[in-house]
Image (tube, rainbow, N blue to C red; front, side, top):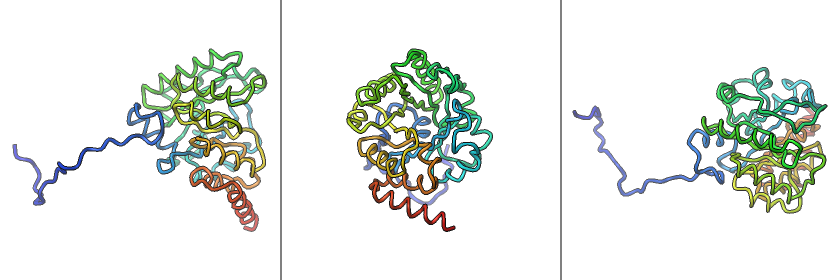
Length: 296
């Protein structure tokens, strides 16, 4: 049958131009399918290869954490400056507008409260629920060296298997207990274990000495946890040093939403992570933006 193409323009097949196979921009993820890579592109900015995740899932074991008493008041104004959100399904459904189109990372493990042994977590999210909520990734806490180490690793591997079936990424989060030393040797062990067991990417703590060996030894992207609230300048220095040492971004919570000027802080963190702004300049920017917000 003749082609149903009535254009008078001559066809061009570009026979002299070789077909291109574009490698994925995040390390270690070339073997994944289009769907998972697309979801990871909604977490990490393809232009910089980095991400500013806003973590406010603390309530799953802490309840109404300081700064998160009214998420509709304190967190929603920050959404335009985020690359992705890390939160629980309850907060996503009840507060986050469905018009938010960047990546969503759902807290997928839980169980005990801050009153109990935190390492005894279970998977707390079904894969169908993650699909319904259009999640880009599911986050699971892993307690390497803790009392319930094997249980938490089993949580990770089960989640990886479920996520891979449907093209949803798994974020392995290294938890550091009070009895564990937070140094490069331990962080190398924990992050490498999570990557080898299938985590799509890993969240861990930044350490000043040897963090470049942590990122070098981990075959998938690493983002750093913000941890407890520290002075704004110190948080900016930490973010800068982490990305200079090979981190693919930050997953900050308290150092943003507990800041005196949260919008100013997240704007400065973005400049540090995506554009490499030096900490001194970023802190000057923070003070300037903070002053402007007070004068309004």
